[in-house]
Image (cartoon, rainbow, N blue to C red; front, side, top):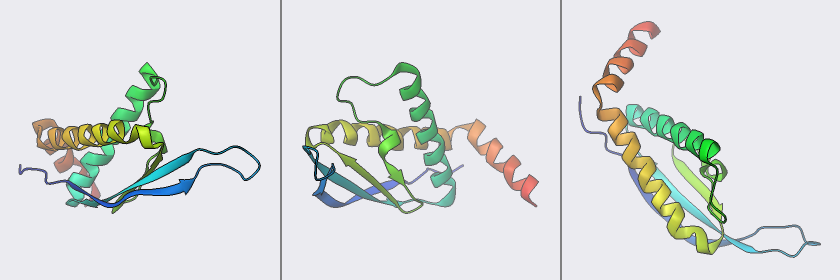
Length: 123
């Protein structure tokens, strides 16, 4: 069992995006973009942690103005999240929690044995 090295590198800081239709009063949003650097097992742990955080948001609900991780777009190599400027700090906290949970999950004995089981069933 080895450490799970997950890195999120911010690639664009606060690019402004138009959030609404031309006929509707719009608010500016910023696009947070992060490049994901991780091994495949660590990416699986990141997906698992994301699902866990989404379940928590659905269960407890969101505080007024709290950004939802559901609005972040994930690909194997990048995370893009369009948010209001005042939500930036909270989004960064959520991403830190995401990475922290992924590392803890990947380093737990249960994760390791489950990964070995999945590999055996693929063969």
